[in-house]
Image (cartoon, rainbow, N blue to C red; front, side, top):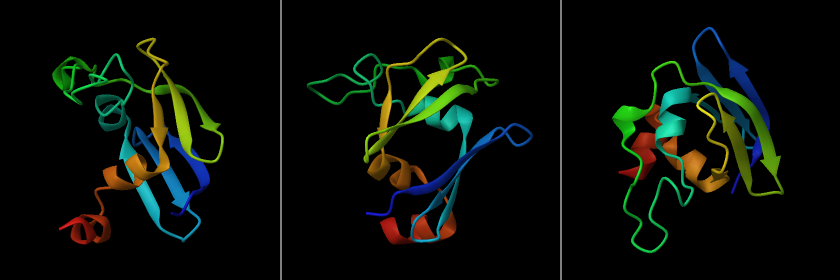
Length: 106
């Protein structure tokens, strides 16, 4: 599994840009990342059902901080105050909506 080589916030496009160690570049709209928060407040721990209503995520959401968690994930502190989500690299890679990643998942 590739890991992020660089992680950059692009305020102009409201995206997080991850360049992976395999050279792939993923672009994630901030709102999409917040809508897919995997924490227990946003996803039911036992059933996996989504608890967060994606429509309630503000369109102007942005990460106030992004930090690496060990060798497996990123943690975000969001502008709405939410800070409990840890996004494993596998989840992030799966959220990549580029043509190559979308094709590989089908």
